[in-house]
Image (cartoon, rainbow, N blue to C red; front, top):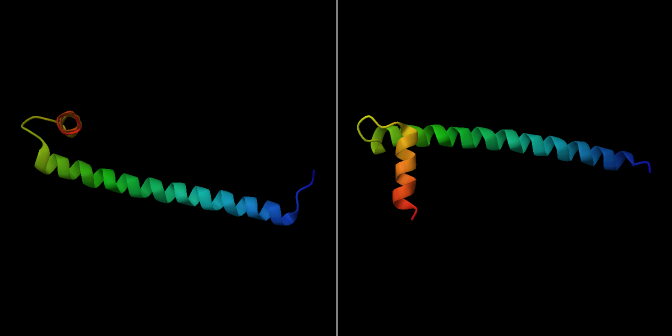
Length: 64
């Protein structure tokens, strides 16, 4: 069944909006993770502990 030009145009717009949203979401989440890692590294790590180890320890201790 043939689609009208309007339906095709709406599908293209929807694809562009979805891909733009995904790019923005990735940028925001990536920026947040950098800030979170810097905070954990500066204030929450113990001597010789990596950021990932500190996050794991914090999750275990505080999410019970």
